[in-house]
Image (tube, rainbow, N blue to C red; front, side, top):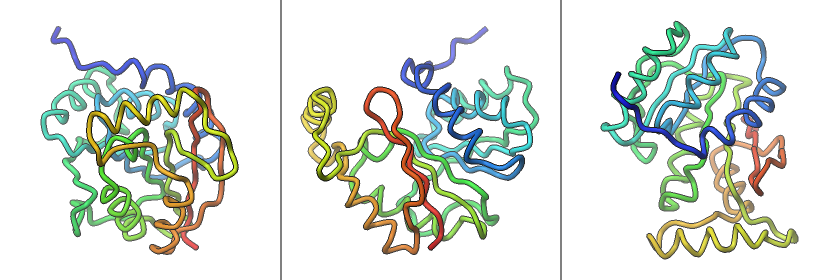
Length: 200
Protein backbone atom coordinates (compact mmCIF):
# COMPACT_ATOMS: atom_id res chain seq x y z
CA UNK A 1 0.00 0.00 0.00
CA UNK A 2 1.40 3.38 -1.01
CA UNK A 3 2.14 5.75 1.87
CA UNK A 4 0.08 8.93 1.71
CA UNK A 5 1.25 12.34 2.93
CA UNK A 6 0.37 12.86 6.58
CA UNK A 7 -0.10 16.05 8.61
CA UNK A 8 0.37 15.72 12.40
CA UNK A 9 -1.35 19.09 12.84
CA UNK A 10 -4.47 17.84 11.02
CA UNK A 11 -4.57 14.84 13.34
CA UNK A 12 -4.27 17.06 16.41
CA UNK A 13 -7.03 19.51 15.50
CA UNK A 14 -9.53 17.30 13.63
CA UNK A 15 -11.51 16.30 16.72
CA UNK A 16 -11.99 19.80 18.25
CA UNK A 17 -12.86 21.21 14.82
CA UNK A 18 -15.38 18.43 14.19
CA UNK A 19 -16.98 19.09 17.57
CA UNK A 20 -17.61 22.70 16.51
CA UNK A 21 -18.78 21.79 13.01
CA UNK A 22 -21.29 19.35 14.49
CA UNK A 23 -22.80 22.22 16.49
CA UNK A 24 -22.62 24.82 13.71
CA UNK A 25 -23.72 22.91 10.63
CA UNK A 26 -27.19 21.55 9.97
CA UNK A 27 -27.96 17.91 9.29
CA UNK A 28 -27.22 18.06 5.58
CA UNK A 29 -25.73 20.26 2.92
CA UNK A 30 -22.78 20.74 0.58
CA UNK A 31 -19.37 21.89 1.80
CA UNK A 32 -16.35 23.15 -0.10
CA UNK A 33 -13.08 22.64 1.72
CA UNK A 34 -10.30 25.00 0.64
CA UNK A 35 -6.62 24.03 1.11
CA UNK A 36 -7.47 20.39 1.85
CA UNK A 37 -3.80 19.42 1.87
CA UNK A 38 -3.47 15.73 2.70
CA UNK A 39 -7.24 15.18 2.74
CA UNK A 40 -7.24 14.07 6.38
CA UNK A 41 -9.83 16.66 7.39
CA UNK A 42 -12.08 15.93 4.42
CA UNK A 43 -12.26 12.23 5.24
CA UNK A 44 -12.61 12.75 8.99
CA UNK A 45 -15.41 15.31 8.70
CA UNK A 46 -17.30 13.52 5.94
CA UNK A 47 -17.25 10.26 7.91
CA UNK A 48 -19.07 11.91 10.82
CA UNK A 49 -21.23 14.38 8.86
CA UNK A 50 -22.89 11.81 6.65
CA UNK A 51 -25.63 14.19 5.52
CA UNK A 52 -23.01 16.49 4.01
CA UNK A 53 -21.39 16.20 0.61
CA UNK A 54 -17.75 17.28 0.91
CA UNK A 55 -15.82 18.88 -1.96
CA UNK A 56 -12.06 18.94 -1.22
CA UNK A 57 -9.73 21.28 -3.10
CA UNK A 58 -6.14 22.48 -3.04
CA UNK A 59 -3.99 24.94 -4.95
CA UNK A 60 -1.20 22.35 -5.33
CA UNK A 61 -2.05 19.84 -8.09
CA UNK A 62 0.45 17.39 -6.59
CA UNK A 63 -1.80 17.04 -3.51
CA UNK A 64 -4.86 15.98 -5.51
CA UNK A 65 -3.77 12.33 -5.96
CA UNK A 66 -3.05 12.08 -2.23
CA UNK A 67 -6.50 13.42 -1.37
CA UNK A 68 -8.12 11.08 -3.88
CA UNK A 69 -6.16 8.15 -2.50
CA UNK A 70 -7.20 8.86 1.07
CA UNK A 71 -10.85 9.22 0.00
CA UNK A 72 -10.67 5.93 -1.92
CA UNK A 73 -9.27 4.12 1.12
CA UNK A 74 -12.03 5.55 3.30
CA UNK A 75 -14.77 4.09 1.13
CA UNK A 76 -16.86 7.22 1.70
CA UNK A 77 -19.47 8.07 -0.91
CA UNK A 78 -20.10 11.65 0.25
CA UNK A 79 -16.69 13.04 -0.76
CA UNK A 80 -16.35 14.35 -4.31
CA UNK A 81 -13.16 14.11 -6.42
CA UNK A 82 -10.67 16.81 -5.34
CA UNK A 83 -10.36 19.91 -7.50
CA UNK A 84 -7.46 22.29 -8.01
CA UNK A 85 -8.42 25.72 -6.70
CA UNK A 86 -6.45 28.94 -6.56
CA UNK A 87 -8.61 31.22 -4.42
CA UNK A 88 -7.02 34.32 -5.98
CA UNK A 89 -8.47 33.41 -9.38
CA UNK A 90 -11.37 35.57 -10.50
CA UNK A 91 -13.32 32.44 -11.40
CA UNK A 92 -13.40 29.29 -9.30
CA UNK A 93 -13.98 25.91 -11.03
CA UNK A 94 -17.45 25.43 -9.56
CA UNK A 95 -20.84 26.32 -10.95
CA UNK A 96 -22.82 25.48 -7.83
CA UNK A 97 -23.12 27.34 -4.56
CA UNK A 98 -22.21 25.74 -1.22
CA UNK A 99 -23.94 25.69 2.14
CA UNK A 100 -20.56 25.89 3.84
CA UNK A 101 -17.01 26.78 2.83
CA UNK A 102 -14.34 25.54 5.23
CA UNK A 103 -10.71 26.66 5.30
CA UNK A 104 -8.16 25.66 7.94
CA UNK A 105 -4.61 26.89 8.46
CA UNK A 106 -4.25 28.78 5.20
CA UNK A 107 -4.37 32.51 5.83
CA UNK A 108 -1.11 32.68 7.79
CA UNK A 109 0.83 30.50 5.32
CA UNK A 110 -0.02 32.60 2.28
CA UNK A 111 0.24 36.20 1.05
CA UNK A 112 -2.51 38.63 2.02
CA UNK A 113 -3.92 38.39 -1.52
CA UNK A 114 -5.10 34.90 -0.60
CA UNK A 115 -7.34 36.31 2.15
CA UNK A 116 -8.70 38.83 -0.34
CA UNK A 117 -9.43 36.03 -2.81
CA UNK A 118 -10.98 33.79 -0.17
CA UNK A 119 -13.47 36.42 0.92
CA UNK A 120 -14.40 37.43 -2.63
CA UNK A 121 -14.80 33.83 -3.76
CA UNK A 122 -16.76 32.81 -0.70
CA UNK A 123 -19.18 35.67 -1.28
CA UNK A 124 -19.71 34.42 -4.84
CA UNK A 125 -20.10 30.75 -3.98
CA UNK A 126 -22.06 30.69 -0.72
CA UNK A 127 -25.70 29.66 -1.00
CA UNK A 128 -28.31 31.79 0.81
CA UNK A 129 -27.81 31.20 4.51
CA UNK A 130 -24.38 29.67 3.88
CA UNK A 131 -21.32 30.06 6.09
CA UNK A 132 -17.60 30.59 5.59
CA UNK A 133 -15.75 28.82 8.41
CA UNK A 134 -12.06 29.49 8.99
CA UNK A 135 -9.67 27.95 11.50
CA UNK A 136 -6.22 29.04 12.58
CA UNK A 137 -4.28 31.55 14.69
CA UNK A 138 -5.10 35.26 14.69
CA UNK A 139 -3.87 38.33 16.53
CA UNK A 140 -6.70 40.20 18.23
CA UNK A 141 -6.86 43.80 19.36
CA UNK A 142 -6.80 44.13 23.16
CA UNK A 143 -5.96 40.42 23.57
CA UNK A 144 -2.34 39.79 24.60
CA UNK A 145 -0.81 37.43 22.03
CA UNK A 146 0.32 34.03 23.23
CA UNK A 147 4.13 33.68 23.25
CA UNK A 148 3.80 30.59 21.07
CA UNK A 149 1.88 32.57 18.45
CA UNK A 150 4.50 35.33 18.49
CA UNK A 151 7.24 32.77 17.93
CA UNK A 152 5.21 31.07 15.20
CA UNK A 153 4.59 34.38 13.46
CA UNK A 154 8.30 35.20 13.55
CA UNK A 155 9.18 31.82 12.05
CA UNK A 156 6.60 32.24 9.29
CA UNK A 157 7.89 35.68 8.31
CA UNK A 158 11.45 34.36 8.32
CA UNK A 159 10.41 31.74 5.76
CA UNK A 160 8.45 34.20 3.60
CA UNK A 161 8.01 37.89 4.28
CA UNK A 162 4.46 37.81 2.84
CA UNK A 163 3.33 35.20 5.39
CA UNK A 164 2.35 35.70 9.02
CA UNK A 165 -0.47 35.45 11.52
CA UNK A 166 -3.18 37.89 10.46
CA UNK A 167 -4.82 40.59 12.53
CA UNK A 168 -8.41 39.52 13.10
CA UNK A 169 -9.67 43.06 12.45
CA UNK A 170 -8.02 43.02 9.01
CA UNK A 171 -9.62 39.69 8.11
CA UNK A 172 -13.03 40.84 9.36
CA UNK A 173 -12.63 44.07 7.39
CA UNK A 174 -11.87 42.18 4.19
CA UNK A 175 -14.89 39.96 4.78
CA UNK A 176 -17.07 43.03 5.30
CA UNK A 177 -15.90 44.53 2.00
CA UNK A 178 -17.31 41.43 0.33
CA UNK A 179 -20.64 41.44 2.15
CA UNK A 180 -19.69 38.90 4.84
CA UNK A 181 -20.05 39.45 8.57
CA UNK A 182 -18.35 37.68 11.46
CA UNK A 183 -21.17 35.85 13.24
CA UNK A 184 -19.34 33.46 15.59
CA UNK A 185 -15.93 33.29 17.29
CA UNK A 186 -14.93 30.04 18.97
CA UNK A 187 -11.66 29.76 20.96
CA UNK A 188 -9.86 26.53 20.10
CA UNK A 189 -6.90 24.58 21.52
CA UNK A 190 -3.32 25.78 20.94
CA UNK A 191 -4.35 29.46 20.69
CA UNK A 192 -6.41 29.04 17.52
CA UNK A 193 -9.83 30.41 16.63
CA UNK A 194 -12.69 28.98 14.61
CA UNK A 195 -14.61 31.81 12.93
CA UNK A 196 -17.97 31.74 11.20
CA UNK A 197 -18.79 34.39 8.59
CA UNK A 198 -22.24 34.80 7.04
CA UNK A 199 -23.66 36.89 4.24
CA UNK A 200 -24.61 40.22 5.80
